[in-house]
Image (cartoon, rainbow, N blue to C red; front, side, top):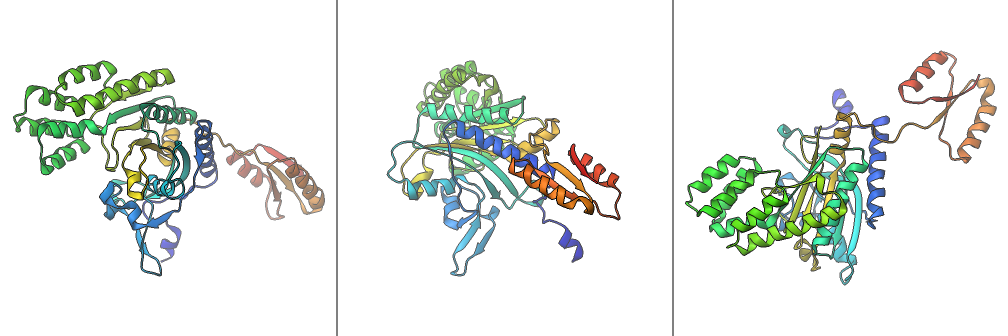
Length: 395
């Protein structure tokens, strides 16, 4: 029992001192950058009614939710994803709003992953949502903003993979796949088993163009020229052509933003969250085993809450980003700027008065009484180990 009191449950962790300060500084940097694009902060509850995250409209699987009951017997869940909460909020308070809404946030999410996955079950997300704009301009703004946030954190080596939900749906539609076959191919793609996809498709006896298009799913680093070639081969399939033309136009806008060098196209890109309807994207860097940013267009989600509006958004997994920065030896802003006033009992009055003056001048000040049983070297060593260099002595 004593050991349990000193341990955290699996999937969560403590952050303290420099780790906590640096992560908070990183979060503040991300929010500041989002506000420069006109996004305003929103804060939704950490738990909601179960129906807000109903898997029926594409949110998190029920088995991955932390569920509990209130006194009235209602089923509540800790939010696994912040986007549905913002969609609910937008429908509640901005139902008739015609002008696009821009929200940004920073908050905790909770997903009950299986133990063998090795993922955190409590994670911090910083993200943005653009509601009420279905244009490719909105797609470009969100991807450009995501790139800016990653660069502002200190990263230099990033890669944004962009796909389109309708491309895969269009392939299935053109191939005449039934629900069982679509699920089988999706599972192979989620597991990055593209040889398995090719074997499965070969057995269906599809025509040459469709077989070739399926074969291109394994290419995770497509350029605009590849999209043009794919459009030629997909000319007989309107849904495929429409998705590729959207990506072409998006590519031109990303060039205007100056972020095209960070971008490639991956038409097999998919997500375990099924509410995405158009452009979707994920961002990667060294030192992270999974995407540090993920997002996309979800034009149908708000309808479930009573507001008919297109939308696009993304979330940066701050924990993943922080770990990647540490792995790349990139120091996060947030160094300890506190002044330490070291004093003995004989100089208590003088030390306290000067500390109050410094705090009025907006300085961070730690009053550190030197106990009789300790040597001053112990305090100096502790300060040095915690990045504190400004020591003032009253001894």
